[in-house]
Image (cartoon, rainbow, N blue to C red; front, side, top):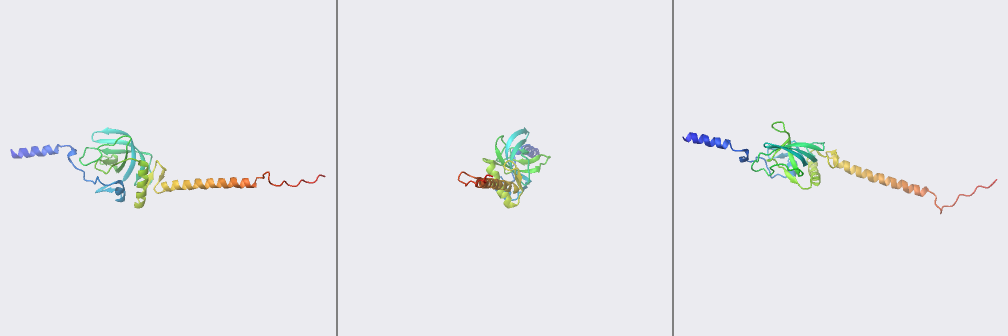
Length: 208
């Protein structure tokens, strides 16, 4: 009788949903700390991290596929403007993000390929953070990534890759100033060479 009760109790716990489990990764890590740790959170290693705005979603049982507009990518020297993120959301106790919301910006660390071949796989146990100002946030994280030797891309702001993205912006700005200065100098030179009413008239040639 006791054995039957014990087996029934074990079966009951095995039948409980995944929500009874707890996260093993460090949900408290900030995005900067994730990058400073080399794209790692606790025992979990990530291939990439995104600052992205959710454009659309496709929900399935315990999983959500989202198309995101990329604002910043860390761990890769170049990136497209959009990507697909697979978010496993089984309602795990301890996860602060239950699902990704359309129109909201997030910092999302991902594994390039999930356990079942999912693209850019992440879960509610990973340190996903909602972001208020994704553009400024992405640039701030780019500085952290640069200091850690992590490749990055800012596809929305610059279309560049790695540190070259920010360098490109600075270079184009300096180039624009140089072109403007050169045109101003040329216009000034032309004004100086152009005769005015106050200039003395050349002497007339004698008539034959």
